[in-house]
Length: 486
Image 1: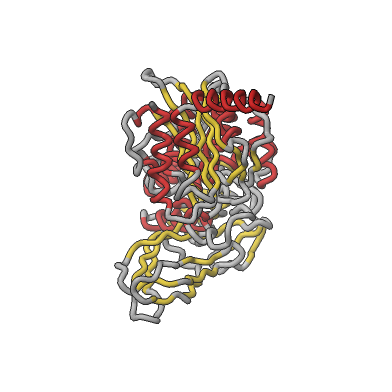
Image 2: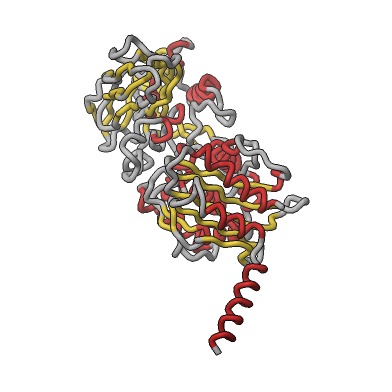
């Protein structure tokens, strides 16, 4: 009897091994050797009926990094539609007499992440300001005896998500989102080495932020050491401090840091443009704080903000284009803009809890269980985000049934494009996916297409706990992608 059982076990094992696909065999081999040995790997591949084609640790929840942008862009497209646009309104308080406004001009943010941005979707700042000046002229305003006020208070809560790392929130990719931004709430500095042990040379490039008080505690470090420069800043006060080290042998370069006062920056640049083009503006520029008071560049709360009369608005590019930029460039700022817009639209509040409720409502509308995801933000920067490969493929399949699927699929790059520019595969044009990476994390999720461009499979590859440079892992995951497309 024992011999019979052993023979049966052997036959079953042999049958299972024979049934294993080359893809599954390759995945298991990869998981058992460097650079993945000791790390976490989760893989799920499903056909369009939902049948599993390959799976490895598929139910294990992992940090998805920017793969979470797939959830944000897809649910936003489903909720708003690909043609949705963000509006920025212009208004005024006071009275207009013979072309003179005795009062303030307000820029009322509506969540457009592209205001003053340098990407191709955005109007150049001068062209945007020309449109705003046209709205003023059409309202009979030729001179302004008052201030230019930036108001981003349509979105409640902190600029950043509370679970973001402290050293991330001073970088351009952790700038945070308010209803009124400018240049993606980033600021560019030129940094370069000085003498060893001396502070790093630092020159602000664009945009100007004349109200900021800058401290420089950085140091020029010996040759061969890493670049550890970080800018530490907050929206609670106009102070920022550069810390860390820059190696002696490095050439000067442009670093992108966070600007926590995008609303004031927008007001400042519109005020400056008005003055440079011959307009009379007597009252300077200001912002509205969270408590409804006006703050000028001295940041001393003055009078209460008024309730402006709206005279018109400008609009962003369509959501389909904004989503494509978000996924191709893995733009955290744009992703947070979509995330917060969903909360504001669904509940009237753009705080993180409301945004999560809005996303979950869309996921349930798509018929998707919520047991495989724990979400903290819209861009994937938080390490509290957790998702399983199995859940991600189920989500991708559910998106194929959304009326917005064409726009969603069109928002995803193929190998050689966007953040996938370092991956080059034979038949790579049949892959549409999103990468996700941060320290110790590299992920790819998306679709394999047939020759007509229709989805054949949904896939998700998640890795966590990587201790080697991601450049050493990328060829291994590219091998998995290559087998998938075969």
